[in-house]
Image (tube, rainbow, N blue to C red; front, side):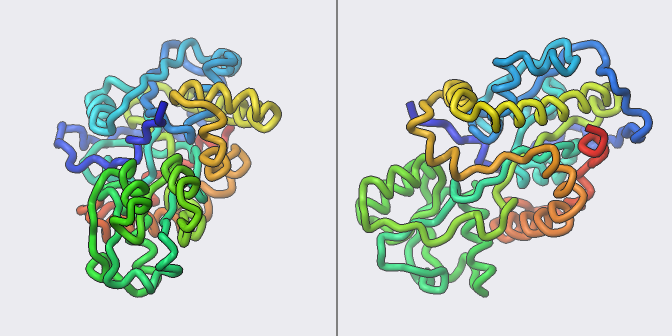
Length: 333
């Protein structure tokens, strides 16, 4: 079964839903150590970067951290998840960093409370062998899916080499088809992500990776966002969620093989098929969150993501990207 990675598609346009009201957020000393009563609904898609939540669900780690009930609500389309969060059907959601910015631009009151994962080599640019560097892309046809992480990565690579999207020939197509177009000789370069990267390189030995998200760790990343109303009302539950991610991460490092099997089953594939994808994704530990969320992530990574998303036309409104982060829950975990 092919893994669905639609969480990588940014919403093409957001509907104003009258949710631009500002809610008072809890002060650090307002965060109770014991979670409030009640359940949590978390939206997510079948992407292995959200894997620690599946480990927590399977191994009872939510309850171990004092949470009554956490329902993992699965979506296959970004638009559906976005609408559910905006309408209050979800309390929190796992989304790409640039999607959180799109939420903010649409007036949805959310905060980033946890860094989940970062793509290193799971998002990349492939060549048929005729192109070996980014400057050589000038005038070349490049297959990629517009409005996705592939679009973000391509724009970042071009800008880093004093080029723009106008310097290449765009060949828009779904990410699942970009690798196939490269193998078929229809384009010399394709930008896509796992498992399509591995599939392309296995089918043609000449296909090589010439650029990946590892050049700017965090550029292609995922975060946990919380509706500010829920943040105000249930800060203890949010803290417990953050602690649960840490517990699950510790379990994952100790039982990687078993936990990868849990994650693979949850996203609809096998550990064998996802081996390269797992290796290309790095999960953030709580310790790394404590360092990054108050350091390079808001000061360096988020501005880079915002710039690339703006150049790609994904983000069309100026926002205070670092201001989306609420670091207090990670600090208290």
